[in-house]
Length: 208
Image 1 (spheres, helix red, strand yellow):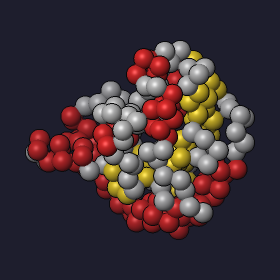
Image 2 (spheres, rainbow, N blue to C red):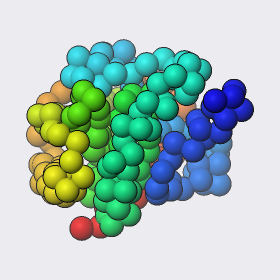
Image 3 (spheres, helix red, strand yellow):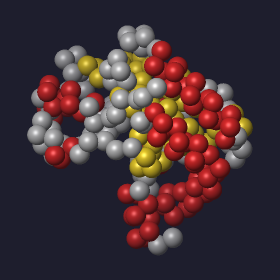
Image 4 (tube, rainbow, N blue to C red):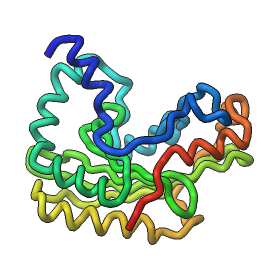
């Protein structure tokens, strides 16, 4: 793979679903933010401990690791795309270069939720469920997360597990958080309350 092809792949990791264009939202100007980009060190460390690697980024990923991951996910790619399409989710590959595909959406009760399908071994995947809510006034992120047991790489079984996963996250009660992380002073230095609230609107609401 050439350097140019690697660059093209970086831009094509969004498989299905679109967020609104941030640069066209008058409430946001040209500010950009997605997923975990506003996390502090404690929050990132909790994800790493929980089994969600957050690499700093390496050009070698697209030259060395990505081709192997593409081969791994190929048998279940249609299942993941179909799931995202049916439920109006954003399907994205290798977020932060993690060995996973993710389905993200705006939780009806507030905040952003994500179902991560990540490679555990050469023959298994595990589902990781995560829901976080950012409180602008308290400069705090609240988080609920859960990881399932490794499952064989079986498209039919995975399709059923994904449907169960979505219902699970939607059944979680707002406020029953596992963890919280404070100290996001940069939020008020970067966005007004209106701009901050508009960020969650960039994600789609799931259809059941």
